[in-house]
Image 1 (cartoon, rainbow, N blue to C red):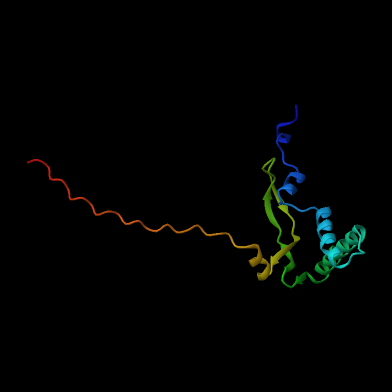
Image 2 (tube, one colour; image 1 turned 90 degrees about the horizontal axis):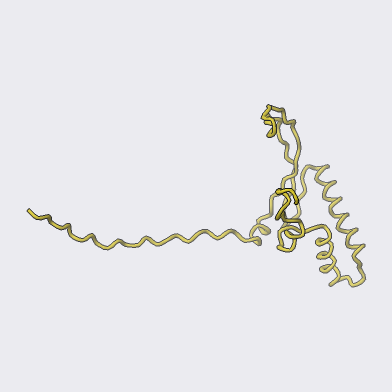
Length: 140
């Protein structure tokens, strides 16, 4: 019998079928589909090479300049995280977490608007309460 943590576990392919994640192969397929409309003589291998080159150039630009902006899409920046104290979740011991760098992405307003904003819940109209009935007088 499999370990309980492995039972009913969702795989990446499950997520891809639901449209949550896109794999490199799916990205190449989509780019090839779009590119082959204009350039009929491009094959998938050439498309894969172009996609790899784009991401290599993107990585180099971010490393060299700490910032890369693509109009109507967004901006990638390098952010520095300060060293801090933390806890080992297994033992509870205090540990030092060293300073590090990470890449941040901020979508362009045009891209953000294209994603759509979450709908705000409709405000309920205040219902008017019926006038209170006159208080009943007790027996004297």
